[in-house]
Image 1 (cartoon, rainbow, N blue to C red):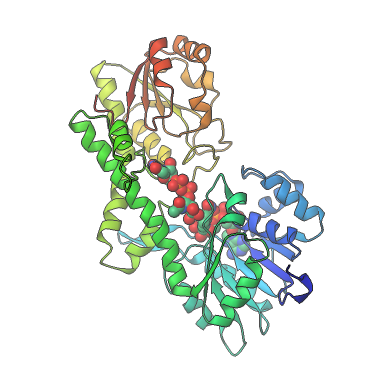
Image 2 (spheres, helix red, strand yellow; image 1 turned 45 degrees about the vertical axis):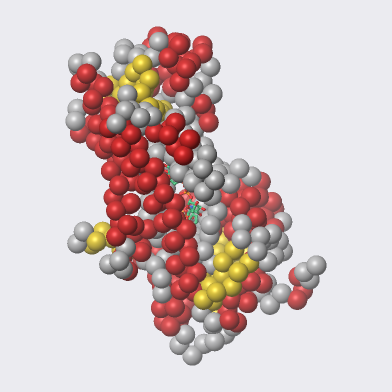
Length: 427
Ligand SMILES: NC(=O)c1ccc[n+]([C@@H]2O[C@H](COP(=O)([O-])OP(=O)(O)OC[C@H]3O[C@@H](n4cnc5c(N)ncnc54)[C@H](O)[C@@H]3O)[C@@H](O)[C@H]2O)c1
Ligand SMILES: CC(=O)N[C@@H]1[C@@H](OP(=O)(O)OP(=O)(O)OC[C@H]2O[C@@H](n3ccc(=O)[nH]c3=O)[C@H](O)[C@@H]2O)O[C@H](CO)[C@@H](O)[C@@H]1O
């Protein structure tokens, strides 16, 4: 049993209180650390203090309020002296002369904000996803005579299951040296039930990018199969299901494109550093083409039926099912593309509270609509009852459904009278 009094680190500053930083800070506070959570966004700090989070993640509200009520978690807009600093700020991609590059400006400003507080034997951990060698470079920059420790510890939790995976997932700790990795292990072993593996910081950075790239490439393969099956009149969903009966095959699901702050971003950080990243670039481009492929399916249906002044009812703009996050959602590109071609859109998403375009109730969204376009695989869409589908039917002008996720109960929608087209069904 770990004795808290033997811990070398007692106070931790977590920089960036978003999807990753807030659960991490709260988890550490609930495991006996004194934690200062820092975010430059005053509104976010106010919300956390009021318990009015705008992150919808199972169990998070309770975890955060428990941490704050215990007195172990305090949140504010500036850092202070601590034994360790954990950086969880965003790392989006930016484009320079048509080339992708990780935007490290948030990391640099986080590092500058903690620099004045750094003392001998402090530990800095980067959890944000970064290109290989970033941690080493920052370590060299900070190592100006002070003895500091530094590690890269990638976060691997799945949105929707963050709290469970924070505890259960295996953890990779990449130290700039062995002492740094060992010190970081002390922190994570306080709450991680999975295995903890130590390595160097550059390997850990590459591991994180490889994991998300592996998924991106595999989704691209499924999307390419969908396009090919469409051409040869084969239902890709049935074909994938049957191919996956092979003991060593596990093809993922095609869809309207890859969104979120991770899988649609991180593979570009490998493309950024190597000319050999050809398959990775190609997969990214293929996944990015999917929203336009989906729009073409819509245009085809509208043209076939000669529908004038069409209205498309979009079901779901979250980047994936059962989350409220719309970052890099394929829905945005689809909406832009449809509206640029004169199609009017209305949007329904029972999870999303704020979005760049107006959100409507289910009834408003489908009223006088011609096509329902399902973009997100929310559980709610699977669960429509026959009476609800009938009500939707009565409100619509044309009765077309295009399901890009294979999520609706198609037999029920067809029974009510809808024409249902599935992405990649070859019809
Ligand atoms: N969201 C995920 O599921 C996930 C999973 C694994 C890894 N990651 C990686 O973790 C990092 C954070 O992602 P996120 O989803 O938590 O982002 P987020 O946007 O939800 O949160 C980041 C927070 O950092 C704050 N911030 C920005 N600059 C700051 C600064 N200088 N000082 C203090 N606060 C600052 C922002 O205001 C924001 O609240 C990214 O690198 C991401 O790729 C995310
Ligand atoms: C390797 C891995 O698992 N990494 C996870 C990932 O989390 P995520 O939420 O971004 O991942 P996904 O759930 O894969 O969704 C991404 C997009 O792909 C679409 N999709 C998915 C499966 C499919 O078969 N067909 C699809 O089209 C889906 O709709 C969505 O738009 O990155 C986090 C941050 O680094 C990690 O921490 C986390 O472990």
